Length: 185
Length: 338
Image (cartoon, rainbow over all chains, first blue to last red; front, side, top):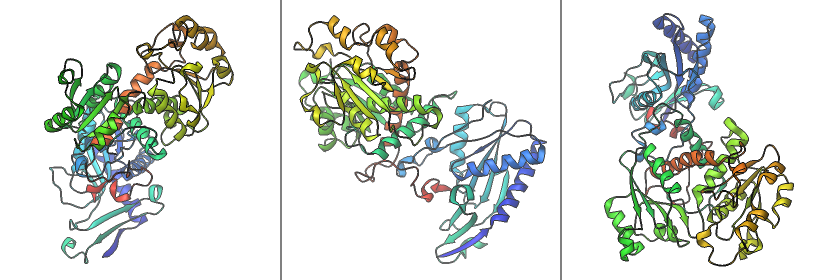
């Protein structure tokens, strides 16, 4: 078992700053933006990004959380999961540009579930995807619009994101069975 | 959770877990599209040996909001009236591929028999058995109490220190029994008020205070008064002289409603006998939670069906219960993202 830290606290801060600037740039300003995090750590990241966008643009953007538990396609293959709260900012998502925020993008199935969940809440003008880590191995035709770090990995390896608000510590590690030869290309 | 048979054996963590999931379910019912895809392809059978409209349609609504298929089976006009046994009925449902059976039965303990018999692999939900228990009613009552008291901050809380007075036909009421056990588990203080003839024999073993005078109970300023329906269909003996006398002594009329503290709630599991145990003034007052209870009933039953059916079945050992949100291993909250 080898564990390697791939992002430190300062790296995470830099990545989120860049993502926030990129969101503002691609949206040509903060108008119509809604930032929705996917629990648990996506919500923390969403709040940080919303704060940064507010600082850079001088306009506060609505932020919320979107639980996807009840839309997952693997529920029956795992022990029962407790759903997490969903909070959609007042004003709803109709006609807005929703930026989904997740910590790690892997198979893409969480995002598929998130798109289904969004559909039940309203009809956004567009949906974008921001993720702190993109580790590849997609099983669905889904790609992120804003990425903190591309982290090629083997599917046997585990990527752990720790955030101060949730875990009391802040870093991203990758751990794998017997070094990370396969995934380090 | 494999089955929900009673509230007596439900732990505090499991009870709060169900109520918290019900909060999430209630949130989804505010959406434009209320239907969730969660239980697509699962089959829920409503197996009702006793008449019921409210509980059955509440379970039916809950199952349908989660996209499960619902089969309603009522004993009247079915093979049961031709003499089929519970075992044969259950095995028929099993053969049809039922994933959950919601059962109401006139015999206390029938749901447990069904769950432990080995006749079926489906999850069993007790929707009222004889004079034993009606756990989802108690859960929705607790949910309503918690929601009125704590509003959006309800998640994770119990009912410590909440004073609940349950009035009426305690003897025949499975709702009262389920409530007594659940409220005790959640830390509430329960007072039972009834004519001496409608108090069960074994009540001294219950974690509740017994009072025979409703005015005395109201003077103690309860946070909620739960009026039980006088079950006239079970009144096969002379439990009280006349309905008018019952109404005068144990009914919640306008005068008693006025004597209640301003913050206290008036609850009733329905259906109400207006003018008997509850007056129209009380039933229609803003303190009445009767319609909230109906709405919350769907959310609570969605939570129970979700917890019974959404996870892998069979692999969850007995007693493992519900996932505790606080203690859930980190790797579980988003397994496929790693």
